[in-house]
Length: 167
Image (cartoon, rainbow, N blue to C red):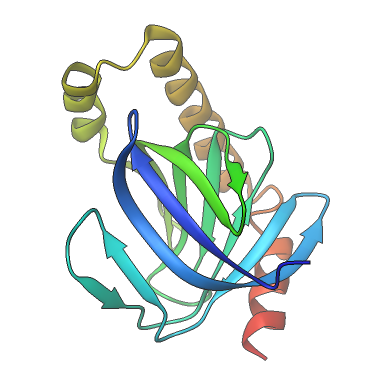
């Protein structure tokens, strides 16, 4: 069994985007697989310089889902949901294509969609197929409602995994 994994986000179709190294495998539940990122872990955007994470967070990967979750605990942005293609496991790495749109929840409870301009720009630049554009938009709308209603795994489940990880 693998006890550490990396995350690799690509821009469509295979351009390196964000990479996060050496996340601790925390476990699985009915919502998906959970990983923990410790402060001081390496991350890299595209081919830019390697940077170091400053705070802990947990990541939820759901087989077949068009989203992934980063939960930051009491950070100013508590929930960060990337709209992605369904994740694929490649050895000790989870790979997915980032489709630009993000659904964010702040510590104050505000929910908003981020990077809509980037999504529109990249549809043309990268040639997203129409079905992918539709799926990204539908998933985004569903996630806004789920975050506003505090549906799982965006309420108790993510907080419980974060608390277990940071204890």
